Length: 101
Image (cartoon, rainbow, N blue to C red; front, top):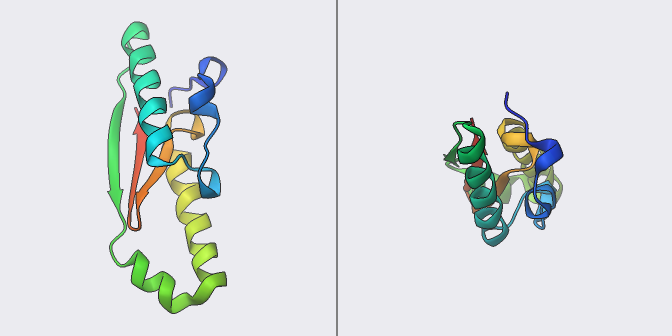
């Protein structure tokens, strides 16, 4: 996996949303910086969307504690697949985005 950890801009390293994810706004800035940097280095990065159908309904059924636990696990999985572990966001209730190679 390609890692930009040492060269990540502050917007990529600092996620401002819950569970270590970016908000949609900060994600766009982070993705733009990563893709711009990757074009210079020759790395092949892309933005991918992940839909988790039924997440909102499942969270409602699980209650607050269960919903927090499932969101923490999903967030960790999305972050783990993103470049440098910090280029991911929750875009909507059931939609996530990440930059990956």
